[in-house]
Image (tube, rainbow, N blue to C red; front, side):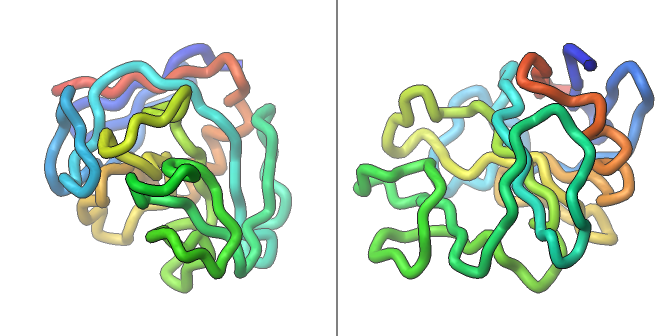
Length: 167
């Protein structure tokens, strides 16, 4: 199992390689806020793996795995008690839908950012997920090619940390 993944200067690096990565359209910020489009700076745990079983099957990893259903969402409503947690849809709280047609969330790894406990307004739904073909910016997540994520995941487990830093 790898201990550390580093994201810096548009690349994601680990002991097994280095790949291109996209970050938030708001750049990197140490003082991340909900809706700013920034990727938080810091060292975070990889919490779990969520995957689209109809598209990728059961990925190899040491992380706990959850299959994404059509009713899977993630609460980004800072006024809701379920803020920055998975929710079942439909939900009255503002949320992000995890079942997406564009493939970006075929594999998602929630990062341990603002979740223990979640502080309303400091940001939610910060994931490591699949990148757009052009590596366009995210809403605050880290994204890599799906093929690269499938190479990385087998070496990831509960002790793996992602270190996001300015490059």
